[in-house]
Length: 156
Length: 289
Image 1 (spheres, each protein chain N blue to C red):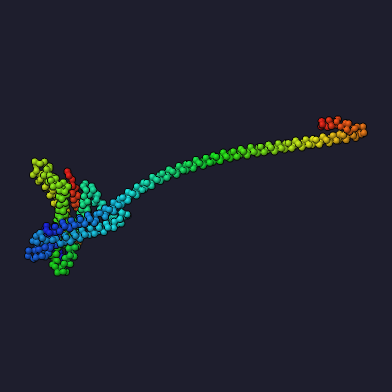
Image 2 (cartoon, chains in turn purple, brown):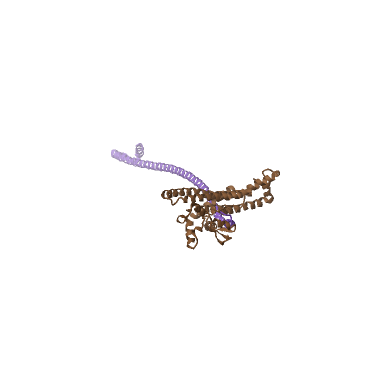
């Protein structure tokens, strides 16, 4: 309970402790704390940047997707148009070809008909001459009455 | 305890309140005091060996632990010890930032040293009161000393030398920074020109002088008184042991209860000492208040 030399020794010890703490204990710990604070701040800033970039990326992706959709629709439309065109063209071609074939066939038929008619006419003429020959025998001169027979045959 | 069985209650208390004092006795020369009268006779030039031993041990423990953690401190993920140390350092730093408005790199380490050192010294109070003295007596008895004259106080903060030493250092720092920041004339003006103006100078000096001097006194006596009283309760509880099973059980219960309550006092007193130190230094750094 006495105040004695212990007081002074304790004052010296206390001062030495405070000095030691101030020189060797406090700075490294505070340094570590500050360093960590800085790192955390940097990390948070980086995270925020990342989030912003992600948002931008998402926007860009959305735009690209939108554009792709429009392009695809455009392409489909073009294809549709082209298909219709080709279809129309084909239809026209087919109709034209059909008409051409029809005309050719008709012309051929006409020709055939005419040829057959010619032949028939000649045959009839010949037959008529033969028949007339048989009927008239020598009386009728083939060359003299030829004109008459032929005009007759033309009426067939 | 068996060694105290023969002692009266008064002797027992007296024994526990006497420091292991080493000094120059007028009759016995350089020796350990054999009783409190011897210690008183040694006068000022005597040392409380137990106080010095435990305070230096605990202060060294504190600095060694914090220094070894600080040397390995990383800014990355902290380990358990570093986490613990950072928690305390952060707590002290928060308090300093909250109460201290000036710029002084000395205040925070000072506050940390006070808080942890006082906390550790106070915590010695939670060790059963007779445990260390008992072994120390047997050790010294084995070396030829009379066990009845071997004293040991394990709680340095129940020695006013320790508390006054700290409060005086704080007091000197307050005066040093007051003069450094405000100049000698500014400091004297603060002491003499308020609160009543220059015509009330004597009254001002009286009031401000008492105000200034009461700081170290109240700072040290608060800590000393709380811990001294706490230890006294432990001593009184300890005296209940050895009087039958009922007394033993109730003493055990009381000791446990008081120890749990004492944890609060131990921490609170260390915290108050730290906070008041910060506040006093803050006032020393402020130009006007």
